[in-house]
Image: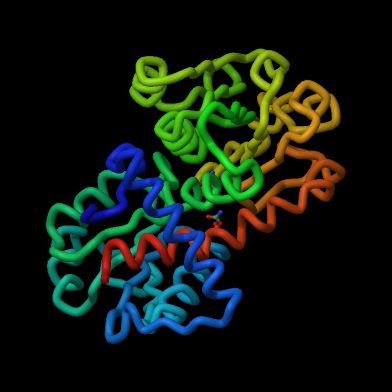
Length: 299
Ligand code: CP
Ligand code: NVA
């Protein structure tokens, strides 16, 4: 494993290794074990979009592993004034030991990896959010003790989260169902791959998707960069909400996950949100899962 650009680049074994290491780092942190695994190493974190969890968990994670992280806002970098990514990649590779980038185009992340000579981590693009899904899989495994054979249902926009959940879920032997409006489906190629490689369905029928689910997942109706479409999307997505009816279709002990930030009473009711504190274990696990990724890539 040289980079983390998208989950489809990882094998099932590599994902399992990351989750195992994440569990170990989590329990070591609870026991107060101090690490110097990444002593002297620096991670650059380029942000072209806002972030709470990704920024803070990567920064704290690097510190906890004995290294340092630099927050690089694209407003301040020359990238924001048009310096090509391929030049930025070659320059930053000479100062840093790894780069985490949050941006719009997946091709920008791929270009950093192609032109740079250090590990690149995708901290969210319009196409994928692999770091989030590693934390999600870790959380599901913590609660359910296994991943294989569980049914995960995603309700909402076929966005970056849906794309990465499909890949991660299918790779780990889960059944994945997506309920979304016809014009807002996940990536075509990802769906075709999922149909070939596992048990996957995509439907407008929320009940069919949620029936018997072990895990219910949702995300905002309008992602970062789609703020201008927010009002239109409120109409289109009106029924694509995790609420008590949906909970009634899923298994009794179904988990509810949300990558956050959440818009209460839009994609999830306040009631369901507050009844499922595992959402905050999921947020915590960003830290542990990413520390595992940092160790795998930068040690
Ligand atoms: N879930 C997630 O990536 O959160 P942030 O946008 O706060 O980083
Ligand atoms: N789909 C959301 C995820 C945020 C973590 C977005 O891209 O804004």
